[in-house]
Structures are given as structure tokens and as C-alpha cells.
Image (cartoon, rainbow, N blue to C red; front, side):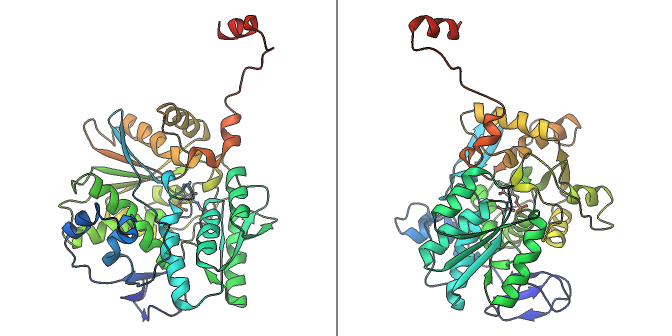
Length: 392
Ligand code: F0G
């Protein structure tokens, strides 16, 4: 296993603390994966916590570590509703897919002897970091955009014991600041710029392929913000094909909020140039204007014959209402997936009969305020007449 620059190919030892190459490009964990997928299937019935983790079940393709920091995480459900599959990553221990990357990054932090870990976050990464750092006995420091994080996520982050720095600025400002702080103060950075995060998040795709008995779907649909997940999904599919776990490549569809769409803008120009925007959307998880994993995500879209789409806040909130009333529920950012599917079906890009998996990235309770803007209780006097009147 090695750290390899995705630009110039320079190789660094796995245990060197660095997130980018000297040439400025991102680093990727690379290895030869030769394990048979039957090994993973065999572990599904095991009682061993490391096998029960939907991340460490795939450990030959994740990280070779003896002592892992695991809850365990993953092993989320795959629902089929209305002919579409939903992989619900909100069912992870802290309510979002971030736990899959965090178990790996925190395991690496321990191996490196880190004392403190940090991230910039729109709320889910910070909650996940706080929980795993508490388990690992490390100091947790999170940089969050002031006043821009959903109540559930903020409360959760503080409850697990993290120190939260509320940065006067947006997520992109917080991201710049945490990188500088980690470099100067010797804190271990666990944003998805950290290549070990990506290794864990790959298992969302591997696990959904396993759920489908390794019959690859036509499409995998993912919300796109800082682009860590889009990058991880591309790498997961590339490695699954190379290892012979699947016979054909699904197409990735990365969906952005129209108010936070730098990746979509670049896609419409065949990735001729990188874009930055001043981000604004109700889906606060993906209110990001300058995504750090841009280059890896471009490679993921190209390698999977993928596409990038954008949806408005009205479209994503309507889709959220549908997912909620299926009895599944998710946070606003996750609903970009179903909103994107509707748009892409209407445009004839996705066709009838194609198998589609939407990845729901966060739990319904993460952002109660977004819900209470659209629905409310009926307040009544404590009388049976009032009940009758209210129920019509
Ligand atoms: N969905 C949810 C619920 C998220 O929290 C995020 C990112 C995304 C989608 C986008 O994933 O960044 O890999 O493209 N949340 C980060 C955070 C930024 O700080 O919690 P991405």
C-alpha cells in the first residue's frame, strides 16, 4: 500500500502525514486488490465486530490495520420503493455516511500517534469526527461556518465533546482555515482531502453491490458537495471492476443544488476549467462553492461515463417530501438524488427499466428546521369538539 499523487504519480510512504503532493495535487491510497468477493459474503453472518462493520468487512480493500476504531458502522439497509433502490447511509451510528470514512481516518490517526484531529464541516463530518474521536480518546476540533449548520448536527457535535470554532465566513473559508491550522499546529486533518477518508467511503458502493448480489445497477446517484463521495464512488467502481467483483460499470450521476453548483458548471463545459461559486441552498450540507476533491471527482465521472446534474431547492424539497412520506426520510441534501432521477428520466437520460440506486447520505432528524418550514401541527383546545373540527 502506498500514497500516490493523482497528478504526477509521485509515491509517498503510507505513514507520512501529508494530504497533497509537492506538485499540489491530491493523494490517493493505492494497492493491488486480489481478494475474492466470496470472502466478503462469508463475513456477513459473522458475529465479530470487525466483520459486522460494513467498512472493515471489506478490509483487504480499505486498510491493513490491526487495531481499528469502529462502532461498527455501515451495514445500512437497501430499500426498494417505487422501482428505485435507496441505500440509506443515514442509518450509520452518527446518522450520516461520514462514519464510513471516519472509522478509517481515525484508525490511521491512532496509528500515526496523533493527539488531536480536526475538520471543517457543514455539520455531518463534525458530528462523526466528534463521536469517533471520543471513542479513540483524541481531542476533537471542528471548524464550522457560523450560523450555517443544522441544529441537529451542531448539538450532536457538541454533545460528543468536540471543541467547535464557529468561523465568521462560509464553509469554503472554514476549509481554508482548518488546512492552515493543521499545518501550523500539527493537528491531523480528517476532511475528505485526507485519502484515508475516501478509502472508507468506497464501501458504500461495495456494500450496495453486495446487497444486489454483485449485479451492478445501471446508475448510482449521489449528492455532490465537497466531492469526496463522488471521488470515492469512482475509485470503488474502478477497483471493483479490476478485482473482478462486477462484470460491468454502473454510471455515476452526481447531483448538486443549483445554488451550489461549481461541479455542474464545469461538467457542462466538459471540465475545461474549475469553477468557484458563492454557495447558497437550503441543503446546508452541500452549501459548498469550492470543492476540494474536484480533480478526483472529474476522474470518477469520466471513468464511469457519468453525468452531473443540478436541481433547485424547490425540486429537492419536493423529493425530500416524497422520501419522507415513503416512511424512510432523509435530510435535504440526500433528496437531490431522487430530484435528479426525476429530472434525468424526464430528459430521457435515465430510461424505464434501468436499475437505479440513490444514496441517501443523511438521517431525517439531522435538519429538523428544514422540515418545520414546510409542515406544522394543528393546535387545538383540549375538547372533543376541537378534535372533530380539526380532523374535518
Ligand atoms: N450529503 C450530506 C448529508 C452531507 O453531509 C454531505 C457533505 C454531502 C451529501 C456531500 O458529500 O462533500 O462528499 O460531496 N457534508 C460535508 C460535511 C461537507 O462537512 O459534513 P461530499
